Amino acid sequence: MPNWKHNLESWKRRRITRRHALFAFGYSLVLSTTLFSCNNPQNNTQQQSNSSSSDTASNTTTTSGNSSNTNQKAVRIVRSKQLTALAVLEKQGTLEKRLEPLGYKVEWPEFAAGPQQLEALNAGGLDIASTAESPPIFSQAAGAPLVYLAANSSDGQAISLLVPANSPVKSFKDLKGKKIAFQKASIGHYLTVRAVEKEGLKLTDVESVFLAPPDANVAFSQGKVDGWFIWEPFVTRNVQNKVGRVLIDGGNGLRDTNNFYSTNRKFYQENPQVIKIFLEELQKAQTWSKNHPKELAQLLAPVTQLDAATLEKMHSKYDFALVPITEAVINKQQEVADKWYSLGLIPKQVNVKDGFLTPEQYAEITPKEVLASK
Image (cartoon, rainbow, N blue to C red):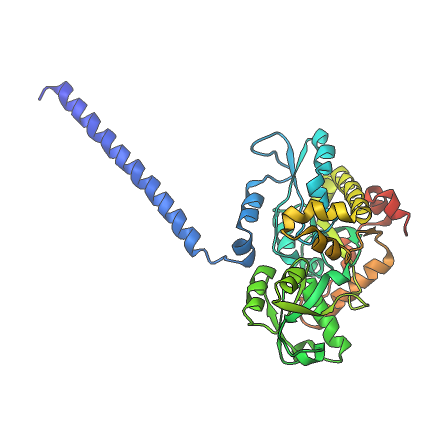
């Protein structure tokens, strides 16, 4: 064979071999990725119930970096699943309009509950969280650099202890020795503690079943637990479907704490103007929600898949109010932290003041009308 033909054949063989190698590598990469996805042991409730939200959080950039699609910085605020003014803020789009000239866009990832939010906050997957009193304390106990941005009304009536519709249980004492489900470190957990103490019982007198809301919803509907401390709209949906009935709610003094908006120290230090604008627009959404109950119900009906009349009744359980952070608010939060430590549910004592700002710092970011209500 002439030398040039030999070289040509040799080149063809090398090209074919290279194609096969590339194909084999690509296939093995896809296969290994698939196997990893199927066998990944980190299969928590948030991933099961909020895969689309997790994808959103993982595909966004941090606020210190630019988005892959635009030159805007992404501010990630938790999507409200509790029908609060935060849901109104997202639907009305006013925050996006104010932040756009500053080079920011707003993203709204979802999470199953407060503890999952603060895990994401600490891991850099969320910038502003909205939770009850207990998740921030558990986060602080884990060493997270959490910052309390604002306090919100307690909205105690919006959290209820459900029992099955046909349950013989008539009072909380009847649940002694029974299974009560709730998200660990959530308001449901805290109100269970409050309820047992109010009845002269101990937390160990009931069987605590730690389940995130979607999993608890399944367990409750299947009769695997005897009670479930949960918030709206889970309460109304279960009552309407005649799956459960309300035994008690967080009203009438059972709930004695506030909700909080929080962030991490880095985001607070780098984005004070964004936080100020967020709280200003949130306060406007609070006021609008309080003054427009019918319009509020119509606005959120498509999102919740509940009819407007039901939503209007449900919204009556909310106060729709930011409240100033005072010494009384901080002291109450410390009481809750001390309670969790005494029960052995956090590993160390927490000084909640480490997460609170100074009065001067709050004055810079808190809406004037909220400060005036002190």
